Image 1 (cartoon, rainbow, N blue to C red):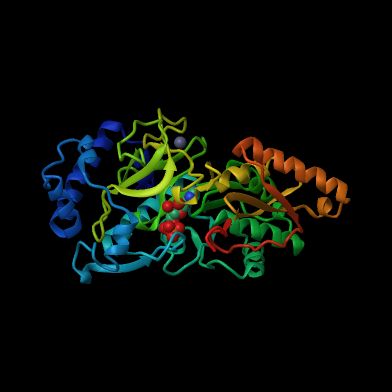
Image 2 (tube, rainbow, N blue to C red):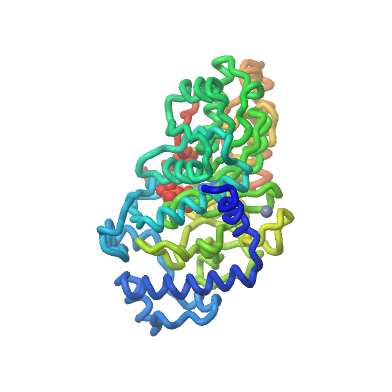
Length: 437
Ligand code: ADP
Ligand code: ZN
């Protein structure tokens, strides 16, 4: 793409709210009408509410529309929500199935282009472009991470290394040999890469790597700091989900006050997850997204189960598209322990405040009689682990107190040897729940 065309694309993040809202309204009317005509489930839900495809007069009217959930994709698996003839579909992708059986999403040529536009805009915010070499260590295949970043980077003229995840030693060797400047993968996989590189005697700070594009799983600000310090790079947060396209739905900016959602393509709302009521900007709730420009399987008011806030006000970077707060948990991650809601991210944040504690942990939930208990296994640095039993006990207590001060519950802290917990190549599995086994 020409330089001027790329600039015009980046400028879309800066258009006036009036212009943006008029595009959104036009697209919303169009997608509602398309889905009404071509998606039987949407049509019947609309009819149940006494609505038809002329019901959108202003943006706010979106609040009248029915919601869609993951279960609707499962119930209509594989192609029940398809809204164009199958011969217009050029790509199928499936979700990784973190929270149950996989779902499939079908893309027309235009849908792939829309997704590519989003990932291009995301990478441009991080300042990545022609001249960069991107090591794309997200999994390729049905998972959207690999293909999503690949198309985005290629569209910008970035040199792409489509290495996928896994084979960590080779990742590090090629990163060093090729002078890779940016990497994309899950934050947990990058932690593994950092650790392995150290073991192999590489010095990250001597490499050309400058940027990490990390997403596909929740990660805390504390984790971000650790990554940046250890690898000497800038760690950017990218958000997305298969149902809505894939990665590139929202992206960090240099101000780090939330992720800008490409809202001319993906319309965000936050709702009260209990009542379904739309909440004003600035209030936390469940993120709901409508695809404004995706026709193969449009998703209208899709409930993501991710908890966030639409950040109020304008961003100091000047982009006018709204931000969502970084997503540090999804509804499904919530553990209810003795009546208290606990998220793994809270435990991660507590752990990483303590020097010498490694960013590798695992949470085990058990039931003893009527009592639920939490065990947090956490790796210590080699120096700490090799220390006297007494000093390990001291740190164990410190960790326990730090967690208790955040979640309000006493937990069992089990310090474990560095390198002993399972490493992930994709999305990390943080919790083992033994309560029903
Ligand atoms: P699933 O994990 O549901 O099988 P996906 O591979 O499509 O399916 O992953 C999408 C989910 O991953 C999102 O709904 C969200 O929970 C999580 N996710 C993606 N990017 C981020 C991010 N940057 N921060 C936190 N969570 C993220
Ligand atoms: Zn910004």
